[in-house]
Image 1 (cartoon, helix red, strand yellow):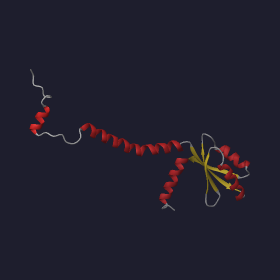
Image 2 (cartoon, one colour):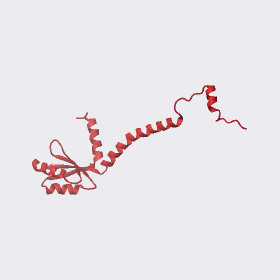
Image 3 (cartoon, helix red, strand yellow):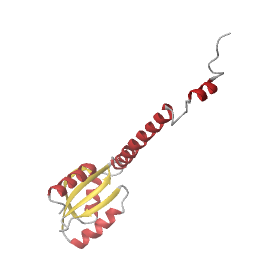
Image 4 (cartoon, helix red, strand yellow):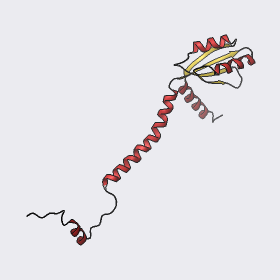
Length: 146
């Protein structure tokens, strides 16, 4: 009959003074992998969600001319339109940036709406919203945040 190692394991370990200490390799490896995945998830997931929310947004920059009170009323009405996310007027009131969803609206419809409201507006530029935010952040850093 062959010697059975498992049968006398406890007795052998007691005699030799072998004690189990710490965790095995499997649980430690799982814990490290979990920490790495959670860390990457905390970095990647919010950026992905922000990208998916802003991917359809475009910014149209208009130059306004005419009566200021009439254009303010038109811009307030424009803000209520479906697909318009934001309307920002610069400090002088001469330029306006309209952030809109390009899937639901386009610059031709915005221009037609402003014309219908009696506001003289000329489309200066149309850029992606994320590109404009990146440019504004760069310009803010270059001018010292002024």
